[in-house]
Length: 389
Image 1: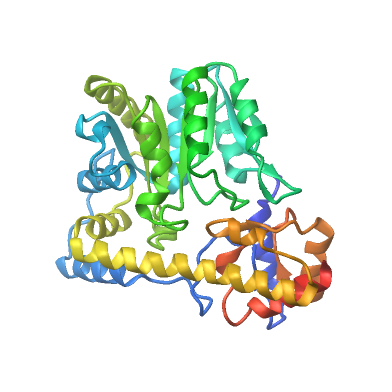
Image 2: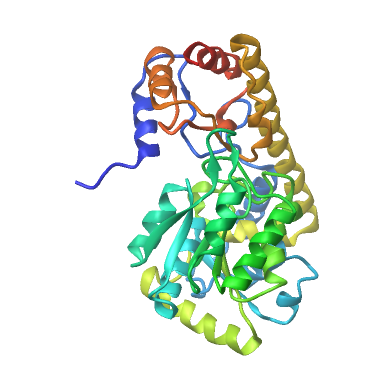
């Protein structure tokens, strides 16, 4: 038997719990204030228009819908991206962000088979599994500092500065999963300088664009790297930002050195896709393309995404204030973290007490999904946390 997924295991235990006050803080999904996965109005409108047209459901091209791929490039790298204008960016539709990582990992194994892959400590569990499954040796670089519940930037910087040339460095572009702790501002410029100086290969994971500060602001690392070097690998997703989880709408992008190289890269990526899943699904990507390419729907999306982002920030504020009031403990660190997740510093024993005594489910590392909090449960969760601290 293969080991069970730690997050899915928490969800299974939550579903079986009969306590009406139960709360699942382990799930990696955005919920609205009613505890429901939202169907965005921009998506609802796009889907209505698509169903009215009753299009045939034929196979898509191997690399996906052209209008989708083009819109994703602009979203990630910006309207004024020199790399995009010079046709040096290759983007292919992928099965969610995970599929984008998989395409990139398989491609890297073909062109740089002896490289090591370095991921942050900690990182999303699937990062290690994906790259190990592709045949790579995966190591960690320092990232999270438990004492401050913040970034160990000095440790990260020193480790990357000693990495062998050709090492593949996986970087969370924003809303780090699982900690919520991000690099900011000039820290990104320092990491870029190290990557260039050491001859490292950057692979950015941008699964939460729009959930930290905004669509353009959260794409800053991608645009910084793309404007300074090649190759730059990037996996992206619309699962969270368009609330299209089950449609598996993502992309893999690669910044190359020239138009000619981009053409060769695309031919190789098509071979990987063809032998993996042949070609991508159409419905969700059509909806995403409609939203991205319609000025009205794009504006509506940005408004709805902003509301989701603001609600998460509000939950952080309320949780921190309530814990401080009840436990007399400063939880201000949670306000510095960004996105859907937080490393709370809760111990394994404290997490187990939350589950056993209060039916509050979190990951044993202390990671919680802040987006699972709402006005109806945040005080209950804070009260329980205060009692186990």
